[in-house]
Length: 426
Image (tube, rainbow, N blue to C red; front, side):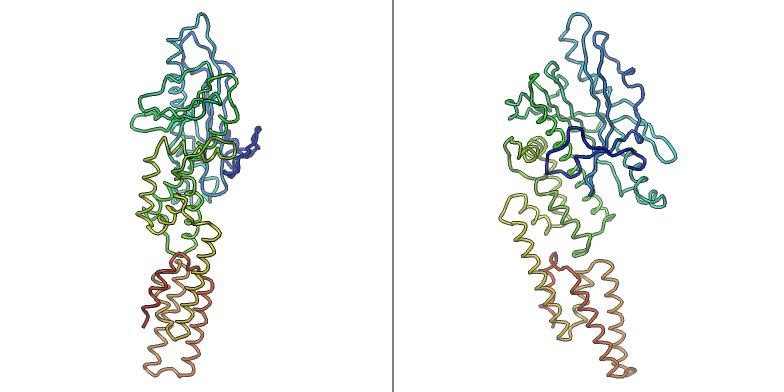
């Protein structure tokens, strides 16, 4: 991947079907550099670090979301007599140092040095430079933006998650797998960092379950952050949506995919084939207010889409295939109704509806041109400066063009509005 590195397969693979792109990752060594980390970690003299590994990876889903991961893996050993009092603060101290450790993010013409926990915006900018022409990068920074970071901590059976604070939540249901899970919030100045802690309580813990929980919870965090950014772009008018436009249809398709499980309130059992749903329920138990905020924003932007998404979320009888067939039938009814109005000589009123309510920008502009020609033609006929036969021929061409537009257009999202408006045409 340009400016980042080679794309590789996960060595351990990925057997989940819920997430696209998780079986591949991009080695981000060309984008981010961590220098002298092992040497600069300052621990108590009694503790030594060995078997230190560092991974820098980027995952993309082929759609609109992706994530960058910086993973630190290490073991510690003690010199001399073991002191549990000293060990209590070891994990917290190490994590704080890792989060604040400076990294270098390479750009086209410069290198940015930031703390690893703050590297998101610089990496987003680098991806924008890699994926768009240079002329677009400066003015379209919002095309690729960084969401809030998340921290995932794994501790083995000898460690204890002593850094957990009073805001930590212990999540039940994983004890049989020798895993204890916590949700916590780490505050760095005024920034709240969502933190998941997986404590492996026995040497023979379920390693694959622990790994899949990490992948699922990371991906859920990415999807939520992505949805927030999309809604912000719509609210700020950076991403304009006209009902019925291709952008609007793409937005609804995205919501159907992201919202079906993302904001689910159902609780799921821990089984291999339901691990994704279980991860969603963990996320909901940990941060229910976050999902409520997303839904409130969505209800403000698009009440109609919000109701549809709520039906999906609540599991109401709205099966995707049947629902799609229903939308197609409604869309065809709207098209037929408009065609009938054109045939009845109501082309002007139909164009006004399509310009005002139903068309995407490009189509609205095209119809506006025809609409202007139509008005001009009407005026010429009233002033008797055009032959009636020629006028009728041109009116027929306008009607034919309108019928072609109606055939191409998707009225599913504005069906009720279209039918209401055309019923009011005198």
